[in-house]
Image (tube, rainbow, N blue to C red):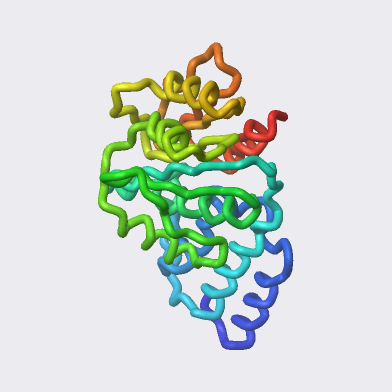
Length: 244
């Protein structure tokens, strides 16, 4: 990766081409090239280099350009992000990506393609996370970090939406591990929301470092548990939301 300015310009130009990293970026692997390059050393092996800002910027640009490859569902979506410190403790799938970084990347990707999305955080209160599709990933992560930490109660998105009369087709919770800190089970909260709003809403819980999840009612096709997180997860959530 270390070379003269001409090589940096050539490589950076290739990265900026449409679809340069298409199909890989809306997942932990999508952020991995940027994170690995910026770190100055390989994840496996002993290779080291001095990061070049032009290449880092090109990787960043390619990351956002790839959002166009994510198929929108057209569903009214609420993302609920775990903002606790534990979201920075582990990495995902052996890559230099933390659950917090992956959740921020997914929030950006969803905001970029879905016309109606709300991004919330499990702070001391359930609060709006100021993330927009035009933000850089680092800025989105900073927005998450600024929220005071609170418990990750997976029933809160539904009870909040019901109380505030918000129409949601799909609730998606991103956490590092399975969480349920409330008095109401998420399935009960989802059922109450459906009845209150007259919407056959769905819910997916993604435990990005979990080995198992048990939030969903197995008899309810509108609930989905995902243990772990890899390149197939975004497509799985999209298909689930769209009813495919």
